[in-house]
Length: 269
Image (cartoon, rainbow, N blue to C red; front, side, top):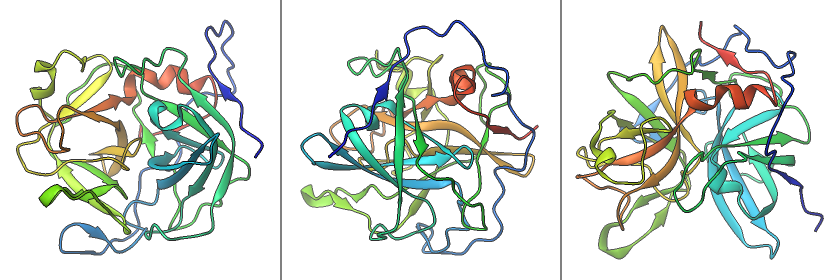
């Protein structure tokens, strides 16, 4: 297997102006249909979310989520890409069993990613061929400002990760599932999450993201569009739902200048 080159650029001295943000159409969904409040029965519900099948040098596989930035780039978590040699991106399916995906041509890990402290947990994937936009595949909006903001109201997360940990089980979902969350400062009681690089959500509602959802989107609706405010990063306990400390997501607004060094993205403004 020919491995992909994982880029960790320590210092970029020159800003490439061609990769500026664009006020393009993003973060819009056409129609949706949900049964039971959890299972997403139409990819039109979240047309920017992708499933990542990832393989290390020994051929061992793992699963993560990601979001479409534009026709050629996906945004995800750095810890999903660490040690990975090849990746496939599935962007137009709700079922995890889909066989048709796009191979990655380049994996980019943030140069200051710290796997011990789980800091700067963000990465990019360049696709070997472009995504054709449709009602099932659309770009997500990124924050228009790098400032630290609060996100009032409902936040949304979705993925194909573990959805049942009852009775010692770790049941992986074969369908795209979603959950509604609320921002909270609970996880900042733990020494690892930091406000400047993380968005925290409450675990008191009994729902959370879990293993297999990593890198997937945390979304906030703003003026009729959905904005990618976080990437699923880590929890603070042996189980995914921690009522006391919640879950930490990578704060995307902190890294928009870094993303701009590699590719163009859309904002809602």
